[in-house]
Length: 456
Image (cartoon, rainbow, N blue to C red):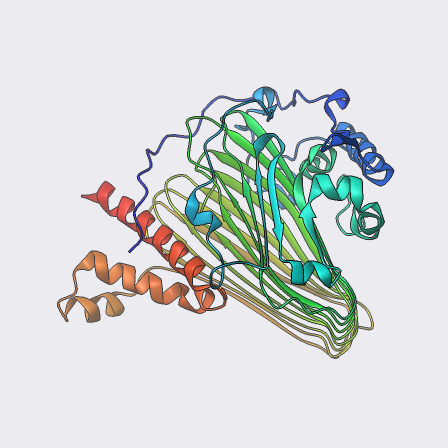
């Protein structure tokens, strides 16, 4: 069993902020690795900054934010990371290879531009680009032009605009036409530092008849004070292509996390998007699948486990924009303590998108009398020959299940853990890397152990 991490749990701040960030246009990044950024990047930042200045912080009167209140976010005091400061090192377990003894490529992003990039010679020889955003901004403007700002617009929200303006951490993954990357690619965004603001941007372009598997994790230690992360993920999958994307969120318990993520899928293509979230103080995530090409399909699998006073809000959208498309979404969550989860899901079928088949399901397991799960599935169907279904459940551990295990001599704490393990197992099995599955099982076990200690 992996070594357990001891965390001192702290109450969330009760201070109300002014709602104004201290960032200025003069702070926008313009140089990357000592060189001037490409015009496509600087123009994008200018557009994002204009949107940032024009947009207000979201309020609970805004429909997507009705159940997520961010008035305690200490906007006044966030600062950008600097290269000359000292930060905690990236934990070794985050850097372990996903398969075997090495990954096909790995990018490690730490505060202040401290980034390392490795890519196997074999994959690089195929024309694959797997590099950090700073390098992409100076050496690959032709690829950036095909993706940057074309999928997620920076004016879609205050935090999208903020990330678009200041993101100097991120990844560009480009797989040329006809190339199949056999080894998985791996990146880690490490975001420590009380009072720091981290901004990231992932740009992924899988061309026609190509394929890749990529895992990205955002993580940080738990510290005494707020940290901010705002991120954008843009994914473009061409025709007859396949992309497997594993995205894990294990931010420290002080992090306020906001993301806008969207994929566009071409004709007869497939994306398998797996999301796991066990960290952060508060998360608001917009995640969208766009099935743009006829015959395209997508599977999205998500799991989250909250405890303490965590608040995780996931807003998902499955857009069937073409005929003969298929989407399958399964999000599973468990809650301890006084935590809260929100899942809002929508399946949209465009006019003329006949034979679309969409499914979404959100089961929740509530393990505490003070925890709360909100589940809001939805359908908007504008075609008349489709099959779209949705469902959601919110329940507690079944007395019969618990009694069955107790009657066979299994202690209560272990019995409850076994039930939770069984609840999450269908999602865990979709994660293609055993060491990652074990690490997240351990994180869930640690949360349950802390909850049990509070009850003793």
